[in-house]
Length: 358
Image (cartoon, rainbow, N blue to C red; front, side, top):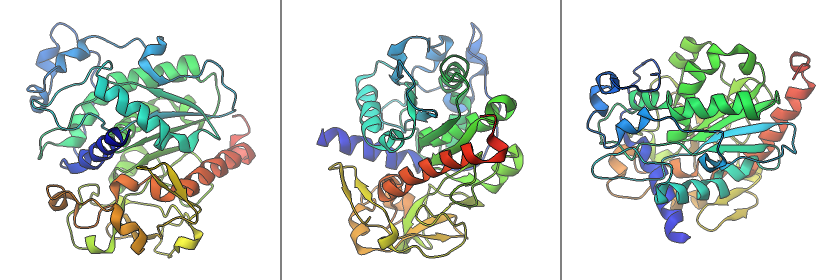
C-alpha cells in the first residue's frame, strides 16, 4: 500500500508539469473510420490513441470505480481522479483494465474522494487517461481533446441515467480537474437544465483563470456558502514567491480553504479543522497548514513549519514547481475544512430561495 501511495502522489504532483498555456479547442465526437485524420498533431504519436474509436459502455458497473446501487443521500458527487499511471515510454492512452490505473484510482477513492462520502452518493467513473505527456506539451489542449470522449460519456450517462434529478457536485484533482474544467465549458454550459442543479464544482489543483470564467459565464466562489460556483485552489509555500509553478496560470484564482475568503486575509493553522496525511491515512487536528491567498499569483500560500516536509522535493520537479510546492496536498492539508464546506454548500443549496426546485 505504501508503494502504491507514493506512486499516486508522485503522479498527481507531476501531471501539472506540462505547459499551462491556454488553448481552446472544441470537444471531438467519438472517432470513426477516418478518425486518424481528426487527431491533433500533438497526439498522433501517443500509443493507443485509436482506442477512442470504441466507446466505453457506462451502463456497465465494471466501468465505474464506484457506482452505488442505491442512492441513500440527497446529493451526488461525480469525481474524476488525477493521473495515476505516471510516466511511460512511449506516452500512451491507458485502458480502464490497466492494473496500475485501476489500483491508483481505487486508492484515490479511499483518500481524496472520501472527503465527500459523509454528504454525497459517490459516482466515480474509470476513464482512459493519458500517461504523463512529454514536458512542453500543451496540456490544456490535450485534456480538452481527450475530455470529449470517456469523461463526457460518463458525465452524460451519470446525469441522464443515475442522478435521477438530485442536486450534485462535480469534483476532481489535477488531471481530473483539468478534465472537469473542459466538461464545465463544453458540456455543462450547453445543458442549463443540469447546470441549475449543480451545488458547486471543485476542480482543485488546476488553475481556474479569469479568462475561463469570462468565456463560459461561470462564477468563482466568493465565500463559504455560495452555490452553483467553482471552488478551487493551488497550494504552495513562501519560498515559491518568485518561482515558476506549473500548477498556476496567468490570471488564475484561488479561494482560501480555511476562511473561504478571496482576499489575502490570513487564516492561522489553529482554524484548520484537520489535515490528512495521505501516506498514513491519519488526520491531525488542528490541521498542520495555515493559509493566505496570494492574489497576484493566484495561489494559497502555506507558511507553517509542520507543512514543509510535504513540499515537492524531487530534484527533477523543483524547476517545474519551485522549491516549495504543496500540490500533492491540495486536498490533504485542508481535508476537514473541505468536508465541512461540502456540507455547508449543500445546506445552503437547499435553503436558498433560488434552489427551491432542486
